Length: 278
Image 1 (cartoon, rainbow, N blue to C red):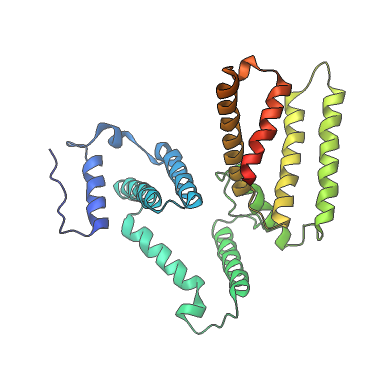
Image 2 (tube, rainbow, N blue to C red):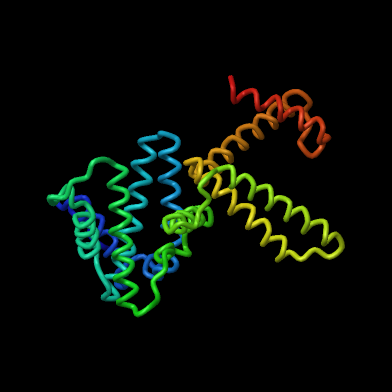
C-alpha cells in the first residue's frame, strides 16, 4: 500500500506524487502502469473538449473539475516522459515559461506594442521564425504550413491551414468569392451523384464532400466564426429540438418517432423550433 501524499506538499507536488505512485511497478495501479503516450493521447483530447464544453455552459464548478482532469493529463504525460528520460514536469514548465517571455517582449522587455492586433502579428512573426529555425535544424524545406499538426480535429486544422495560406497571399479577398466557390462545390457534389447513379465511387464522393466542407470552413473564417464552435452550437440546438419533438409526440399521441410519418415529424420540428425564440 502506498502512503497518501502529505497535505504539507503544494497541490501540484501532491498530484505529481500521486501519479508517481500510480505508475510505480512496485505496488502501483496495473492499468496506469500499462499506459503510454499513445494510449493516453485520446483522453487528453477528450478532456480538452470537456473543458471547452464547461466554458460554453458557463458552469464554473464543472470547469474547475474539468481543468483538473486536463491537468492530470499533463502530469501523466510528463511522468511517462520522465520515466523514459525525455523530459519531466519541471522541464516542460521551464520551456513554456521561456517561450512566453520570449514571445512577449512588450511585457518582459522594452518593445512597444500598440494594441492586440499588433501583438497578434508580432506573435505570428515570432512563431514563423521559430518554425524556420526548426526546419533549418532538421534540414528540411520550410513551408508556410509547417507546424499545423495532422492530429488536430479536421475543422480546426482546415482553419489553420487556410490562415497560413492566407498570410502568404493565397486567399480570397472578398467573402462573395467564397459564396461563388461554395455554389461551385455544391454543383460538383450533385454532378458526382448524377454521374454515378448505378455505381457510385465512395472515394470520389468523399473527395467532393470534403471540398464542400473545406469551403464552408473558409466561409466561417471569413465571417470571423469558429466553425467548431458553430457546429457544437448547432449540435446542441438540434438535440434540444429533437428531444422536444420526442416529448410532444409521446405526450400528445403516445407514439414513437418510428411510428410517425415524416410529414408529421416535420410539423413537430417546426413547433420545436419555436422554443428557441421563447
